[in-house]
Length: 125
Image: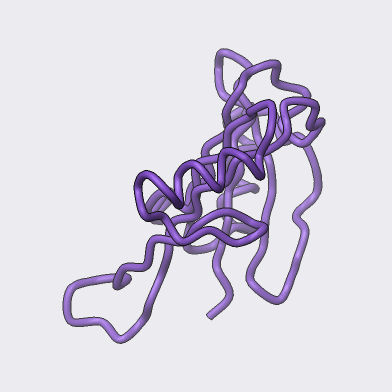
């Protein structure tokens, strides 16, 4: 079974996300939205499936990264989130929450061996 298939997003804390978005847009040309910026790519060579990696600043007061105290969180794409979560449970990995389903995919959060919160995302087809 495949596990991680790519990086779905990089999220980090900052004092002023709007100011950060504007700085990156002005100085580095990153086209930002309220959710950050998407960097599009193809799922595989010779594939029609598109994917993207999300770059997103969060307010430094966000609780979204908890229970981790780190300033960042990485989102990894996966192929079969339900099956992967079952395997991770068997391996003793801490599952932070239940799988959430949205129109753009399924999500769950886990913690690594140093307590960093990690987001796993199975993109919607």
